[in-house]
Length: 218
Ligand code: DX5
Ligand code: ZN
Image 1 (cartoon, rainbow, N blue to C red):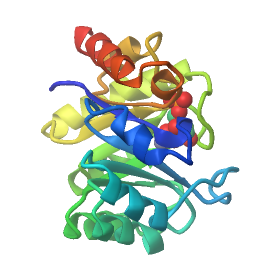
Image 2: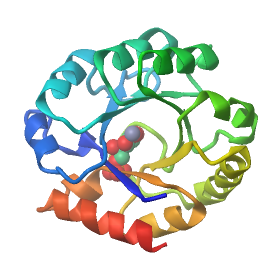
Image 3: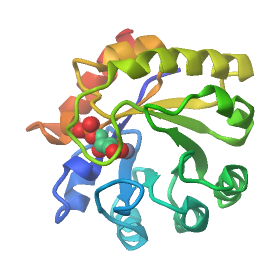
């Protein structure tokens, strides 16, 4: 499958989000990090900003909910029109129900795992999701160092997904850059979130293309 690039607007100027979206017309997705200062020690944005962004761009939104009680909040992001909504396994109390609600509202359903969360307990849930997100930093902030310790889990997740039929996308998020994207692709990831590596450069669209080329080389 071709590599997909999802620039994270967490690294963009929050007063100019429409411009940040327009700066990457070649992106497959725009990654939107929703943080509540409870599940992670940072506070970003919520549904009203997502609703405004949906009007400001035609790029599909890849909403990554780093919040407590995603069972309560996630379906509304799908109903608003997000292309994908990802919830954390560590926070969801009823992940099967919530993933089904996200799909029923017409969005791709994603399940995210922190670096220390094993993938094996979620094998039976692969049929309930369209994307598995493996965090390659501890969630909460952009610009952190990529955690190589997650690479074996990416490989094991790829094996489980292939065994299951290969329909589930495997996303990596955190510290993904020109230096680290090849090892993620080689391990089996196919959707790549990049914040600093895109918005920390002078030419975000060019950064997207460079990351895509490196990922597809692997
Ligand atoms: C971190 C967020 C990431 C973040 C990645 O908790 O989930 O999406 O924006 O930023 P970089 O690519 O700079 O590590
Ligand atoms: Zn994210």
